[in-house]
Amino acid sequence: MAKPDTLLVDDEVPFVETMIKRLDKRGLNVISAHSGADALTQLDRHASVDTVILDVKMPGMDGLETLKEIKKRHPLKEVIMLTGHATVETAIEGMKLGAFDYLMKPCELDVLMAKVREAAKKKHDHDLKIEQARIDKLMLTRGY
Ligand SMILES: [Mg+2]
Image (cartoon, rainbow, N blue to C red):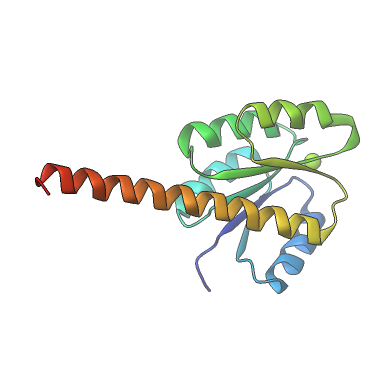
């Protein structure tokens, strides 16, 4: 299996299973987690993940808490919040805390795919800038 690029976090197991199949068909390499704690473990295991799709409403550690922890531990990973109508305010709060974007459930697959691609591109561009800065620093250090 190719290295995972996307982590889907949602406490509804059937939803996760259906989404993984659909997203895999569209060329993403998706892994999943069913809780916030599980999501953090998966991110520690899989450094290749660029984008996290994160359910807002989960028992235990909710989406907002999970987002804060993800951003603390992995500030460059992009997070898309998944929300129901009742928790839009939470999604907005999430965006203030560094989430890339949010989507309303049930979400259109095309829209989700477009957002994941946008998020992954942002992460990739950001990584390149950091790499370039490292090279610049190295050149300076060596007196070029
Ligand atoms: Mg939920």
